[in-house]
Length: 67
Image (tube, rainbow, N blue to C red):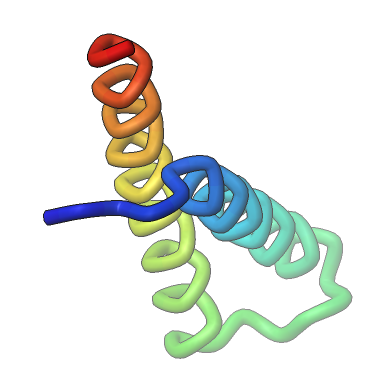
């Protein structure tokens, strides 16, 4: 698998983790209603953001190791 720009994965993963943090915060503060879909979306965003971040960091390390 070839990744053109691994830093893009890091940025996208960061925003997904941020969304996975902000959605539960807004639910606890009662700005957003607590629904199953919103809770699942928050969890999925957090997990996928963490996964993309790990892949992005591994890709950056791999490309810098070759140089």
